[in-house]
Image 1 (cartoon, one colour):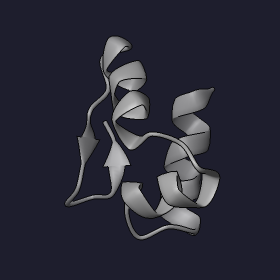
Image 2 (image 1 turned 120 degrees about the vertical axis):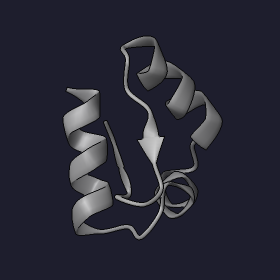
Image 3 (image 1 turned 180 degrees about the vertical axis):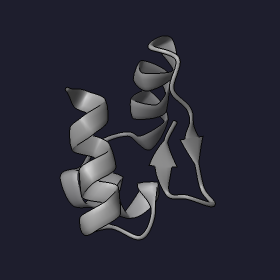
Image 4 (image 1 turned 120 degrees about the horizontal axis):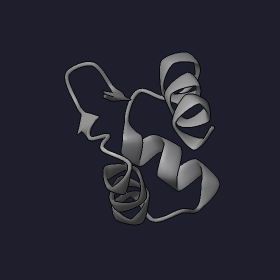
Length: 50
């Protein structure tokens, strides 16, 4: 569920992971770590986790 929400926000509202993290006052590295534990990694070129 987290992956879907984050990717939707990145696609529809934010041009980068850092913009999303600033907007929600969260740690971008912690988010990346959480999603990497599930096998997903942020790709700057596509601005999404895959």
